[in-house]
Image (cartoon, rainbow, N blue to C red; front, side, top):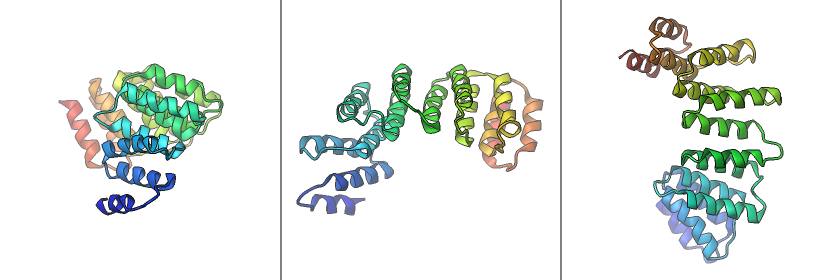
Amino acid sequence: MDSSVSLFEGVPERSLECCNSLMTSLLHCGVVEDSVEMFGLMLDEGIGFDEVSLSTTLKALSVSTSGSLSSCTMVHCCAIKSGFESDIAVSCSLIDAYSRSGHLRLSQQVFEKLPSPNAICFTSLINGFARNGMGRECLEMLDMMIQRGQKLDKVTFLSVLTGCNHSGLVKEGKMVFESMKSLHGIDPDRRHYSCLVDLLGRAGLLYEAEKLLKQAPVKGDSVIVEFTIAKL
C-alpha cells in the first residue's frame, strides 16, 4: 500500500483514473479514512469525479468511524449535481451508507427514485432493513421482488432471514427458508441454516433447531457455535 501511495505522489499530473485506483486500493486495505480524504482532494484540486469515485467514497463512509449523515449527504448532492444519482452502483452505495447510519427513510427515498431498480438495489435496501431489525419490511421487499419478476439469489434470502432473525419472526423465517428450494430452486447453504437455527434457538424451539442443524449440508463450527449460544 505504501508503494502505491508513493507512486501516486510522484505522478506530476494526477488523473481521475489514478485517483480512483488509489481510492479503491485504500478501501480494500481498510484505510477508509484516507480513501474518504482522497475524494476531498479530488474536489479541491479540480480533478473531478465519476460514478466509481462516488461509489467508493460512500462505501468508505459506510464503514468509517468518522462517517456522518452530513458527509453522506454531501456526496449525495455531488451525485445529484453530476447526474450520477441513478447509477446503480452509486445508488446501492447510498442506500447502504444511509442505512448503516440508521437513516432508513433516506435509503428508501434513494431506492424509490430509481426508474428501474434491479435485484442488487432491492437486496441493498433489504440489507438495510435487516441491519436495523425491520423484519416486516424485509418480507415486504421480498414480496415486491417476486411480484416484479426480479431474480432472487442466496444473498437476498440471507438478508431476509437475517431480518426475520433480528425481529424474532419465527413463522415467517421458516416459510422463507422453505420457499428457497421449493419455490425458487435455490439450495440453502450453511449461512442460511445457521441463521434459521439461531432464530429457532432464540425462540426456545430447541428441538426444531437441533433437527434443522442435523440437516445442514456442511456442519461447520460456526453453525454449531451459534446453536450452542442460542441454547444458553
